Image (cartoon, rainbow, N blue to C red; front, side):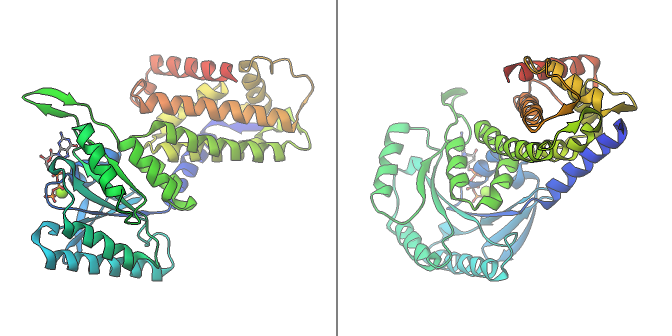
Length: 376
Ligand SMILES: Nc1nc2c(ncn2[C@@H]2O[C@H](COP(=O)(O)OP(=O)(O)OP(=O)(O)O)[C@@H](O)[C@H]2O)c(=O)[nH]1
Ligand SMILES: [Mg+2]
């Protein structure tokens, strides 16, 4: 069966777009006094500088909802926490009301999923008023169980910051964890005295606390924990392998390898969404042609499979005229892992989308694929 290269690319683009569009929306709330570092934290965790470039809309007296078109994350930024007891009570009531409304809607896209409570670490103190606020908030939150994480911001002095963490933990407030973070390197007179740290740990804690439906979303929007992105992408490969094995359970003739294409396309789209890259058509074209070893207008399923098998040491000798479930699994694993390798290189900046449009970039991509495939 002949396949059309352009159709394949279009199919990939459409599937990626659909994956991104159907991704569940994550809603997080950030609370803390002015100047503790809420905006700096948010701008560094997510791949869009949400606070700097998003659109804010006031939703309650003290809360602004920040969104960006096409970005599946919505941030509720609170204002006025430092203004005293009255404001703090109002913030708590508005927050619980917002949580209730989200929960009552029954729509996961509208629910509040996580509350990040920020305390400035350099202050070395956790005031009685703040303790009281968290206690009463947790009380009101009891029926909703929204995970609350306490973040010690601007924690550039690790030893006393660890002490503060221990002290807060000893209060058993009912929060998920207390995490010290430094969102940006701390410099004094131009010299760096402490490198940024802790954002990857924060993301790991959030990922553990979120419902399964939101794990892809968090991975897609965050830019600080590559290992977790890779892990999540590997879960997408495992799902693809299962589907491919099922498709190949009764052997597929080589010439009908097109039967496997939808499975592979879905897998590639899932991985792309988890990495969260805005992939253009020309990039997809390069990636696909370097995967399948051809960019001819039309090609046969048989060519596709034999090209792929040739790249996998040990699989090249697979005889016969059909793909078994085991071979389909092997192909899918190799393809998925190779693609994760490419996404990783893009994440690290070793390859840029612009590079991929040049001959050199294509060459590099091809090499990367071969290297990844050889690992299998
Ligand atoms: N080096 C370093 N500076 C930080 C960090 N976090 C915050 N700052 C600095 O602290 C100041 C306040 O940070 P913001 O992120 O604006 O604080 P905020 O909580 O959003 O403040 P409001 O929006 O006024 O409520 C800024 O000058 C930041 O550059 C950090 O992790 N590292
Ligand atoms: Mg701010």
